[in-house]
Structures are given as C-alpha cells and as structure tokens.
Length: 542
View 1 (cartoon, rainbow, N blue to C red):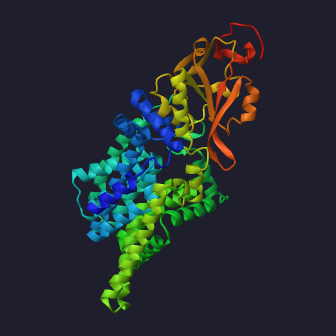
View 2 (view 1 turned 60 degrees about the horizontal axis):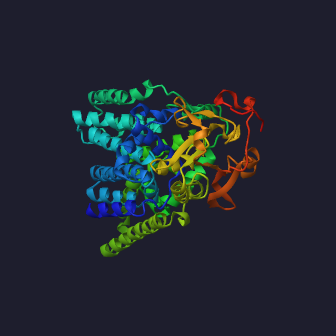
View 3 (view 1 turned 180 degrees about the horizontal axis):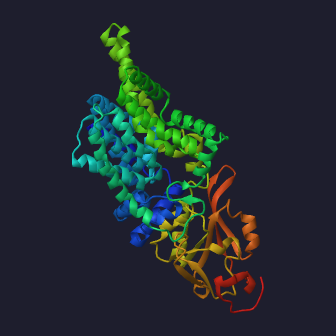
C-alpha cells in the first residue's frame, strides 16, 4: 500500500500543469468561480445540461490554491486516489488481497486513468462514484453487510454519481445486476431494503430538477445533455445507420493506446476464465465494463476517451483475474521456478511498458502517444490551452503600462474563460463580453454607452459599457481565429490593429489579439445600434 501511495502521488502530482488548461476545464472552472462568488449560481451548469457536483467541489477548494487549474485537477486527483482504494477493496473481497493490490497498481499505471486523473473534468469523479457503487453492492449482496450504513452509502453513490455526470444513469440498473449475480440467496427482503437507497438517491437529485435555469443552451436537456440522444434511439429502432462504427473504431484506438495490448490480452483471459468457471462475480465485472461502453457507443454522436473511463476499473480487475487464470493453466510448466520467473517477467514487462507510456504523458504531453482524437483536442486545436500562459503574461505586462479592458467574444472555453480565470484578480484589467462582435463594429467612436451583461453565463444580469471611461484604457479584443478570421474581422473593424496570435498548430493559430487604433474612427448609425446602444452623442455613419 505504501508503494501504491508513492506511485500514485508521483504519477499524478509530478508536472501536473505540463498539459495546459483544456477548453472544457476552463468552462468548468469558470462555473466553479461563479458558484464560489455567489451561491445563487449553484446550478449554473444546468444551463448546458450539466450536473454540478464537480463544480461544487472545485468551488470549495479554489481558495486553497493560487492556480485555479491546480484546484480543479486536485479534485480529480483525490477522486482517482479513492478509485484506486475501491479497486483494491473489490479485488480483495472478490478474489484475494494480492489481486486487489495488483489490480490497483495496474489501474493507476494505465495511461487511461493517468490522463483523466490529471484533468479538471468530471469523469474521474464519476468513475470514483461508480467504483464506490460497485463496492457497496459487493458488500451488500456478496458479504451480506446490509446495515443502515451500506444502504445509505448506496443511495449516496447513486445520487452523487448522477450529480457528477448524467450518463451515470446507466448505473441505476446495477443494483439489479448485483441482486442476481452477487447474492447467493436472492433474498427479496434484502432487495426491498434497497428502496431506501433509491429514495435517498432521489432526494439527492431532486434539487437539480427543481431548479429552472434562467438561460438554456439550445439543443440540450438536463438529463441527456444533448437531445440528439433521442434521435439516436430512434435511429436504432428504425435500423438507420448511426455513428456506431466510427465510435467503435475510436474506442478500439483508445484501448490500444491507453490500456495496451498485453493488458487487453489478460483482460480477455480474465473474462474467458471467469465465464469458463461460471463465476458470477466475473460476469458482474464484465457487465460493469460492457454495459456503459455499449450504451455510449450506440447513443453518442461522437465520443472521446474520457467517456469510457467508467469501464476501466473493472478492466483492471479482470486483467488481474486473467493473470491468475493464465497462471492456473500453466501447470504444463513442470518446473515451478521457471513458471514463477516467466509469469513474473511478463507482469514486470507489462507494468514497465505502462510506466514508460505514463512518463511520456507526464513529461512532454505534446509528443506523448495520444490516440489521434485526443491529440487533436488536447494539443493541436483551438480547444487546447497552448498559448494561454503567453497571453496571460502579455496582458499582465500591458496592464502595468496602462489600465486595459479585454473584450471577448461569446465563445466558451478557450481563450475567454481561461484568460478570465488567470487575469480576473490582476489590478488594472477589466473584462467585457462583446456579444456584438459579429454584428456591429467592436469599438464605435460616436456611442456613449452600450448594454451588455455580466458574463455569457449570466445574461440576466445587465451591465453597461461607458465608452467615455474606456478612453483612458487600452482596449483589446481576443477571439478564436476559426470564429473570427483575421481578414473578415479587420474589414468589419478598420479601427482594429492586429497584435499577436497564439497557439500555433500546423499552418494555423488558435486565437489572436487585436487592439483599438485611436488614429481611425468608426461612427455607428442609430439603425445599426438598435436598443443595445443607450446613446449616440454625435451624428454620423460608419
């Protein structure tokens, strides 16, 4: 256990910020900051069909760390450590203590878990709660520990699991699996007691459904997040082609990249060996791996590796079961010492290979052996956070010369939310959500004031930009290049000047910074302004 603790702390804590802030991390931490600043925003993630538990925990730890990204990733690190402990307990109870230790070691060395335990996303937390649910079911049915604590524990795992990530709904069927596969007596009274767990779960979830968001992203739902899930269900019923084949191919790439072929072979051996011996506990673990995976493969329009983190704890346990089964089948190796050396050597090589891959992801994420889709989103697209640190230093330097106002587009994540997180407490820097960036000139010279809102997540809270006050400040506009191509933006805004681009990948950049050129004036017609402009003190056209 001491070795597991040291390995976990080393692999998760070392170079934690080596991979810069990712698009979704920036959004979640921006929400966490809004929650911390005003508890009236407690359910603000519901506007995008997201449950808020990860943001609540991040909000609680934000004051503990000077870097908000460290705070969010700390939540995932803590959740991942509890998952490792849960795997150890499951292996010990279902098989033997050595199997628990081995499965825990495999899990924490798998690049699959390493990557996601080091990201400020909800997936590690949801996986921790899924592991807790499985452990609670094993205790309840397999060891017949049916006291009040276990019943309450199961209810909390179900309720908090849903509040961590809505696909956790898949696991609400798992008490049924536990009843048929883990219980030796099929005690109906014991099953009925689970009604208390279900009631507690409903009470935990209820406030989320009672809250009505003041704004809502079109096409999202508070249960399914993306309403195209309904379309996916209908396409399955009507036998129309969906994205299943592409999702399956992507999942295969994720497994080979982050679980590796040797571990997958032992995993398959564990499934085969368990079914061969008719082990109901192995069937339970196989369902834990297969059911969430299959549902996501069928229903998701597109998938990312983090969607399948649910399935990795049982994969680690079954891989150790496979190692045991291969050992048992190795009776043909007559010399005991040779058998022990051979199996130990194979296990050692597998673990060393995993450690080698882990070191690549930790030390240099840009050159690490990512699955192609993950490489794109984390290191080689406008969703990656490369360039944010340089932009933060640039604006800090500018604010020391003269107060600045940063105008952002309404794009979520990178760069606006990330820059806000790192610059919100810097003296001399203000932020404005320039919702008009794609419809009107950014910086009109004949406008007195313009209505806007506190943030793109708080459009019900109006604020006003007084342009006379902005004359004493340096004005910048920051936006993704794919949303605001430079040529188009400068054509619409002749009083803008290009400053710098950040996050270069291939022949493009992620986002760019523009400044107001005081030598060029833009005059806005009243017809262009509508009711968003409070006053136009001077006549004139653009």
